[in-house]
Image 1 (cartoon, rainbow, N blue to C red):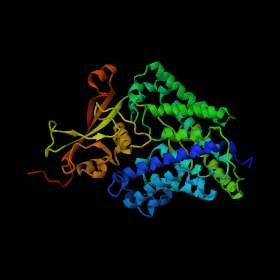
Image 2: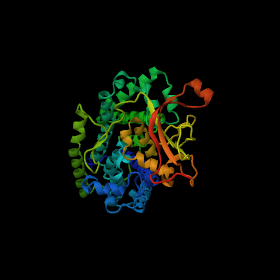
Image 3: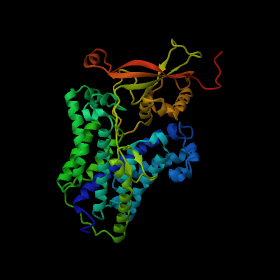
Length: 473
């Protein structure tokens, strides 16, 4: 028991597991509420089409057995239920082996969703949740103290998240080396939050301090995770503070929160450990076998980190057991937004009454102040940010989005903040235009109440109508 477990970390394990269950709950809730429009039978990228084109071994998923909307809803809401049970501590009421299996259920369900999620689920935090969730299953419950090797592997994940992100910044955009990236980032990030406008207007010297602090936190502090206590706890605490700063500055889904969860596992929290039994032999064998497998697979992200051609957010196996991470290797200097509009006119003209669709998170209405959505993930809004960077990012799904808007599709409209058309009166034509968005100044905000100003750039999609729909007489 002394060599295999670390009784001093029992409270750290408890906090880590409950926090991870909360992230799982948000992830499954996001899937349950958005899947019909994104991946459903009439979704923009239907699962049914994906599973006919991609073999099971490349993307293992329960949806190869069945891919109806009802089955997806069952899996997503079942994931919510299991995550809520884990959040309430159900695993501690079970035998050790049953607790492990219970933790593997949300991992399996979410893996099934991610592997058929296509571009809607092509984010690094999906793999990060899966990698962390798989390892958490072998952390044990109240019957045994947490295994040392699992605690080490959790720190190894956290190290790769932070150190990999730090390296990709130094190797990527020159503004990170010049400490000037945050002159632009708060304005051009994918989804600003309610405080992002204020972060953008901080003095430039403070932006340079932010960038320098980021380098220290991501390139120096992660190494300290593998030092003795209390230095390791101090390093983890500093990472948590940095992530909370990022939470305040923008909407990054659960990326910051899952990083905080990982850092919690490295803290040695005070408190008396409950009486636990020695770890059974079968448990030691299973944990050591899993650890050996994960260390063997870790050679891929380790090589990637030291490579001059380092890549971000890539999985090296279809189960997402070990992955590489990174964010904002390059920072946009200008913010572009795709504005989608519709008209009831049979023959669209520039002077037609074009009504603008409002999205929940992405900038649109100049006077609409950004809201806090993270850790909830607005997937369509995030993809609209990529679509504004280049039409190539939207080639798979943008046409389907326009088609659903022309149909006034109920599930698609639920993803939006507001549709300008009544449910029984769909638009005759839909178009998209590209604008450059900038934050207003303090003076402009006081004078107009608008947090954004925008400039027309070009046409993104010409007026489009449903094929085969006749004009009104």
